[in-house]
Length: 403
Length: 129
Image (tube, rainbow over all chains, first blue to last red; front, side):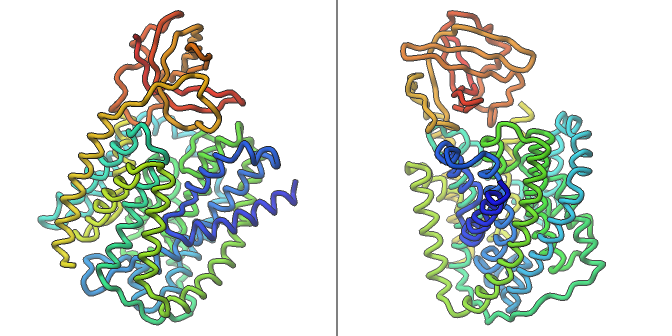
């Protein structure tokens, strides 16, 4: 059994490299494919081993997915209305440092969250029944806060319009009766192809990247990790709110957050979200993301012992992911200024289009991808945060709790 | 491409596209599936069945109903708190409004799921016929 668990962790890490590095291939998607083959897989192994594989893949993914999000899709610094901290560092030749900051965030968050997992879980378990009664209002309040904090002079209506537009798109897409994997074209368009198309239209030139490890003050690291844990814990138990919203809420706890601090926060939140989703599954029987949905369906019942094995597997996978992230980022940094950026971006867009076509099994998936890509372009061109696009999940969830 | 032009094109296509998808989703209906065609490879898919209620068990949180058509029988789970619905726009009636009885003919829309090795339907919508 122990050997099987280690093999599952290693295979999970290998798959995590693929899902983490290729935008558009998300762990949710691979988990879904694993789930559809679970009948065959269960003939050769146990539900626990398949779940360990999915968790290891998911944890490795949360460490590595910052590499493409920092190295790809950077807008031209001079013309972009808002440049994300990771892209800003990439355009200064510090892409490696940016990824290392997210790695520091992910690894510290993994250790702290595993240590605090059960106390945080026990606290949430106590207050969750009360939260659930007011879930719609909590989510409305969070959405209003995220929209309100963005108002800029005459532009105050745009965040609301984008939130509602994405929300209606989410409702319409989730309501299509004959579409397989509706979230795949929706989220790929809103957050993947739209960013890639913007970077194509901006004719971005990536400078030569330096390999140097960032220097972080202990106080900044402590403050950032504290903010990550509080915001990540809240958002992990609230449906529809993801790491991007948690990052904004987290940075509110910590005034004048630096670019470096923000990257540590982002890295930490992705990992916290995944670890606490495991606890939410055990304590609340709620699956908060696609990977955990797959685990919950493969395992009929998740016991305390299973959860301990999952957390230990997450820790081992995290250790392997640190080694992988450092080495893969070095290779990326050295190669990136030499490769044809436009060809790479166009190839990834074509890969996403092909995957949407095959996974949706009809042209409706391509229509959703096209519409969500146009919707995803809007925030960048209006100079507002892309987090408002999460209305695509938040609005349906709010309506579900309200009606 | 000019910054404003890309913004205008995106806005127009986004609004037109959202309403097109909304129209398609509201006007598309699921075809009726025979119970014998429900198989493992359809888990998590939405389907619609027509059939007769052969047994109803009412518990505080769920209603478990056996539905029979000319090809077979399947168990349908109806969550009283509407937990199974993804979003409410298409949920026309709640289980409380429908007095489910044996021999009643119903049309059920829901998601196929596996519970303890058996295939079941988690109902999103029930219409009495």
